[in-house]
Image (tube, rainbow over all chains, first blue to last red; front, side, top):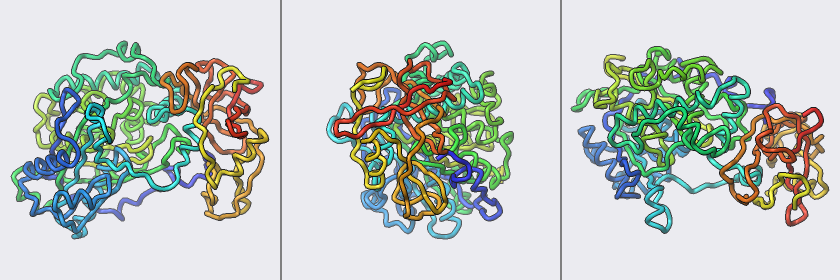
Length: 408
Length: 143
């Protein structure tokens, strides 16, 4: 559907009243971990890898398994809880693709705030790259079980739509046609992200990249070149959350959840109301409003970059620039090291890692930056960071605004 | 299979879902039928057992004009599912139909790189193996 009157899912139709939602300072992320390799492959996989991430994130938090009473993962959660011998009071198996982890943080903050549980661990592991070598069924821990009708099989795949990139290409096509956005402008996002990756020894790709390199890389699905597209690597991560009160007693400085919100618009790309406006136009203002921050207050944006166009749409929908102006906004290199809006400082899905559902890594990097643990890529004086995830094919957006103790 | 240049030689042939039988049956006559909710009253897409506006079950099938314009387009150099790479790049497009709904299709009968956003298009039909047809679109007069 595309007709305004008949569309019930248009972002503007779901204005959220922020005063009804009071997550600001209700919970904090107190531990993080991730496992990524420059080879793109990890030795561990499956449950063992998930368990390792939980162990490392808890160690980072100064907590133990005995403290954990809540679990979040983008799969049927009972099996993982059982494997980890958690007997949870709180389970979140929300699975909306790459932004699942931002939604997990939002839900966990609400649950902790409401007293449903005290310590929630969230975890992700996927090894699509080494699974190829291992053979046999992939050891995905991401939920792959799909239920219910899949209209895309009947009404998209016969037309040869190559997923996921074909869906994003259509969005880029529309944005270019409406706003004159260029391939060079999209390429600049990949270039600046690579500049950050050069500062991260664990990034998959660290060599210098130019706009010409991106434009010279083969077409995949127009208007996206190969280097407009994210990596396929192994990767895993975890986070630990608890109340701000309890967080203050732990060894590391708490990273407070200042705001969090969701914006969903569709599942298959045919049903996206306006291919240039994502649910971030709902989740962004809602999360920022809850946090009491404006775009100019944000020191660091971790904006899901499955493709260059994905990141460009976030910049507009979150209000860093006006709708349609993303191309000119990025072309001066402000997203890279030393720029006015550091974005994807770990090297992003474009150059650091992308195991399929990348949203976990947005949170891990945001926390490290706010703690001052980011080494050569540290954004100096970072107090407010935004982790903005995109799931499906621009389908479900989750915005999390995080801040240091000084922002409370 | 080809009767218009650029039509694919191979496509995935999906089993018709129960909700979409009216659509697929009409394609046997090379007719584009869309689901219509008499209560709302309006067309919707994709076919569902209920109207996505009111959730009513009184869904009917009505013929569509078979015309529209390209909302967005991507030339696929990397082949999607079911396609033969030997067919070469092809245009995957979202088409805004005259009836106010948007559907995915291919634009054929023209070089894929020449398909543009806003281009007027009209339906054409690719025969499937079981007597059904898959809607394709070609540039319409004025394109």
